[in-house]
Image (cartoon, rainbow, N blue to C red):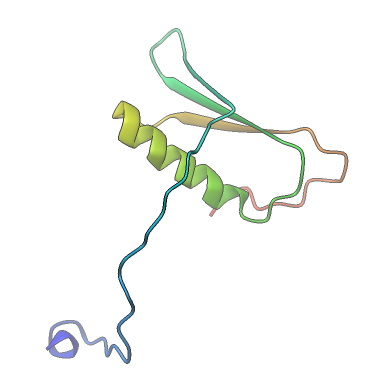
Length: 87
């Protein structure tokens, strides 16, 4: 039926349960003078999934505060920055 509706043939269904228990702490989270949430992460290593990590922070912050933050990553590492700047 899905194939008739969407044209997509699913060859295998996966377990949809995504269990996760973790405490996530933003390095710095504040409110600007104009009321925007500002999230700043200090990063000292080349984390290849940094953009994805920031997206996870963004969604977690939105869940808790009901709005999306403006985000900044401050790279303070010695090696040259080699991470993707977006998803």
